[in-house]
Length: 68
Image (cartoon, rainbow, N blue to C red; front, top):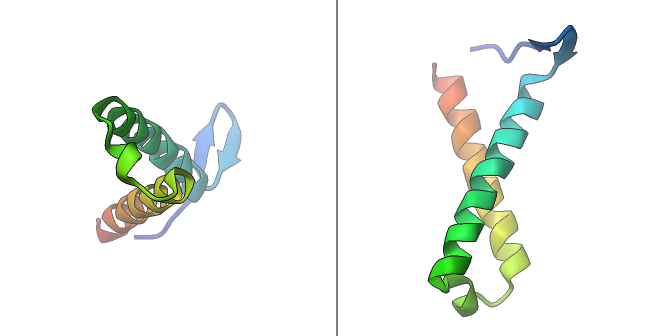
């Protein structure tokens, strides 16, 4: 599949930008869940862990869109 621009209220936006925003929202939800369950206490560097989780989520979204 080709990654084409998306028309948002008359403005063409790269599809990667939309995927990055969606991945960030998913990562925020995962981070909040991990904080509530106390899982981030066992992580050496929470910021790096959050960034790594963001990269994993973004990669999964990109691969899922590309596979269609």
